[in-house]
Length: 90
Image (tube, rainbow, N blue to C red):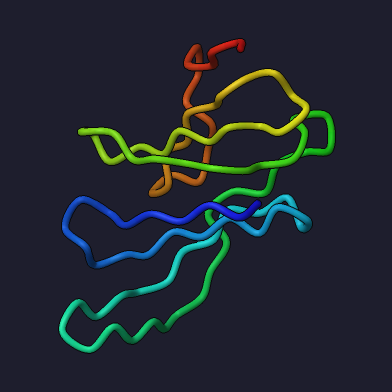
């Protein structure tokens, strides 16, 4: 149930580790496929539920589906914060 996606310029690889409630980022080399520089972008609270799939929008923000949470949240991966007033109930 892990999600993955790339930044708009394909230089950052985003990965969700559902069981640790974490959205992580890696530097990505498009030519070699190598990843490096692992870091956390956003750590979900338990009440936000389990992060699952995600996609990136035209502004470079991540939309993350919350398994058993009945919602999708929008994250700013650069600021490491949930975008205010951008949560969609499912």
